[in-house]
Image 1: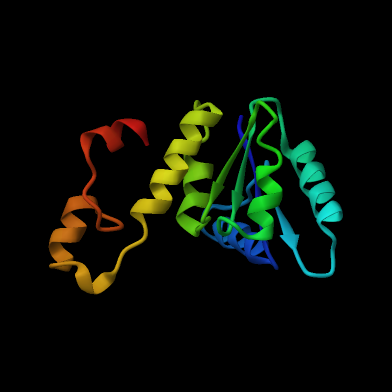
Image 2: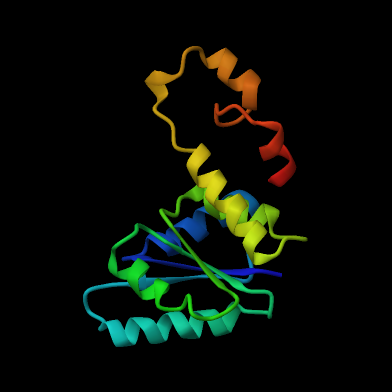
Amino acid sequence: MVAAVIVTHSFVGRELIATAEYLLGKMVDIVAVSITDSISAFEARGMILEAIKKVDEGDGVLILTDFFGGSPSNLALSFLNQERIEVITGVNLPMVLTFWNYRNGRDLVELAACVKLSGRRNVLVAKSLKMAETVFRRNGRNGNPVSEEMKKEC
């Protein structure tokens, strides 16, 4: 099964996992690496490598980072030369939940697409929604219309 490493500034990744576990129960094959200003880039890269080794079962590792261009993202991108590694930036709680709920039976590429889609469709501006009733009828959770294509994929 695909595993995940969340690489973020400070302890954001650790807290995302803790929150997901609060909602879903104990999660395995997912760990967080916290990047702080007290560690060097060399040390941080080593921490990420150790995290990958810890969770990788051979099906690949999805690295989720907080935002593109930051140190966590830049460090994670340095692992893209490995065949079974993918990086997605902009991690949020819906992405972590989707990773966990959709990883069975999906390869790294399919799972990465589902996680990215989940992250994007869960970012909304509430006042731009026309009517809450219509929104919840359309999707039941987050207000975005769900196309037939999305239903099939994720």
